[in-house]
Length: 385
Image 1 (tube, rainbow, N blue to C red):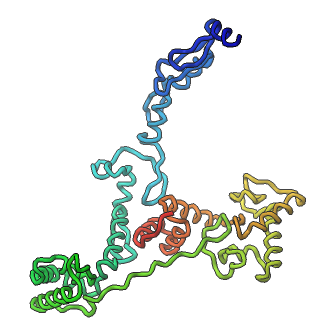
Image 2: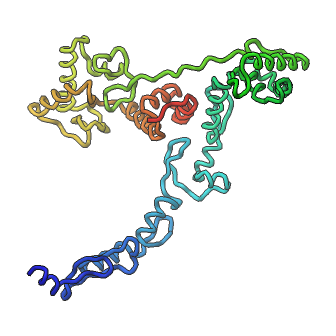
Image 3: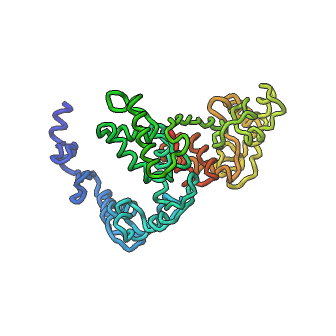
């Protein structure tokens, strides 16, 4: 009976397959919204749809269009949209596209084209390098120091021109094998199947040394010596305070904290009972009275805008629960504005794909420079998260 009733009173829309009433219904489709199609069963909704989606609106830059194209314009091509500069990390209006074709190809805004042309001292060689070229420059440092090629000694620069001629001589002495010359210069070794090993490498070294001596160029001591691979130092794990990005220290070992956060806890000793009591007291005060900072962002603080002072009977059980999880999931202790700013910088570097502990170590090495930290992460081959 239900099927017969439906067949008498309802029908299926040929466009969207929706079941609608044969009479008295107001099912309609928007002629302008083709992908994806828009349908509704109310005339009031039709008027609202026309007003929201198809009424012409105006952007602050002067461009007029419907809502959807205007949203895309605001996100991608509006000259007044705010963009974070990849070099100075400051927010700027995008402005008109750069005049240089290379800058446009790289996706630079007008500010980034200007900012990228500024020079910065390289921390490795003290050369002045453009900001836009710093990443590639630091990769060159990694290439020059690569164990596979051999690190050049301090006097290697004086013989760079003569070494090319000497390499050609080594190549001729080994039947035209350029791999022999490369292995001799770099201090590396090549398997027997590929070219140079043992005696062949020795002959290549002798040929290069003789050629350099004929040209009156002294060979620096240790030029042909193999280079020991550099050991990659793993940064320490981060503090268990979720609002801190400092590395763990020996002082804060009981809670796996950094020195600064451990001092905030104020435990009189490293005993488990004393540490637990100090943590509970710290969290209880934080939940009931707060830290006194108006701009505090800690959701477990009474001073934060998102929080409010807790009653003692509510704060104590909450502090006990948080203290038990201190070594596992960590706790939230209030930090200073400087520490909050540093955390944001570390998270910005983490957006490049590096683990946060590597980003924190890089920022420490670069004296707080985000650009220098990013260059260091690329140069040492930091792992990806």
